[in-house]
Length: 57
Image (cartoon, rainbow, N blue to C red; front, side, top):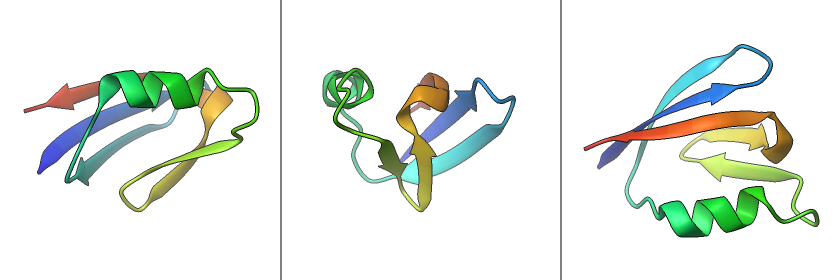
């Protein structure tokens, strides 16, 4: 398991446990205009609201 700390432009912070995290793949999803939301574990966020994602290994 990898713990992610996600900060949003709207001021929220989330800590999520995921089984797999690929920074390059996540970056591609966050920069694709055709995608509206991105899921991290049980959390679904608007891709444009995500400010930062920091893994804690």
